[in-house]
Image 1 (tube, rainbow, N blue to C red):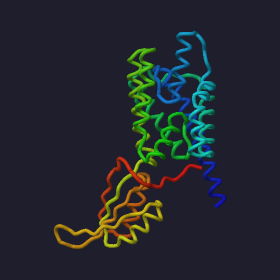
Image 2 (tube, rainbow, N blue to C red):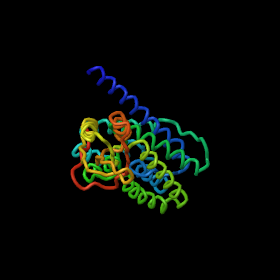
Image 3 (cartoon, helix red, strand yellow):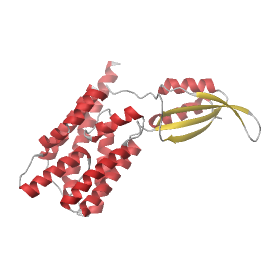
Image 4 (cartoon, one colour):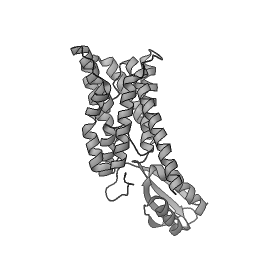
Length: 287
């Protein structure tokens, strides 16, 4: 058990370092070349940095600026989310900031549309890798997780809305073409996060089976979520069946469906995306 835990920590460390490096390279290649503002704390830091450089002719290092902007989100993390989670996130923020300041800037392409799409994809991958390893890149990620834990709703679109406001300010200061391309960048990031990180999305399962008790027991063992057993009647053959109704995390869906088929190969499973939950729903807490 101790060896497994040690291996997990080592894996998490290397993923965090790789994600931080990926973020820094992305900023120094795609983001800087395109003059984009990614949104969130990173985007706000870059916006302030560029504003001082353009209007006051003052060069502000990215690291202290990004750490200062993340101060309140970090407090929210320590206070409401988890100390270990926030501590590792602080490491990501600091490391990615330092790497951004010290790594050289490199131009891959000057095509702003390509920069927006592929830069956004890389940004989404970096953020998702962190989230899947129980850490975050800071800023609005803390706010997103906080909202999700309190409301039980997927908050990525809410954060996208906040980022659009930041980008509108960028448009007023630096031109609307860059701001609009930045929205494409942020949209690409959000879509990648939706695909790669699903912990705060839920799905509803409707499972028609002959052995509902075993299915419910498995769902509870695998996810810590319960189920409701409803009587059903087939419309064609008039056979009586049981329907298991359960809401689980989207990230658990594939594993649960596989287990259902192992228990009852003839089971019929319908998976429905859940938009909102009102009531108690267990979410695995962060350390």
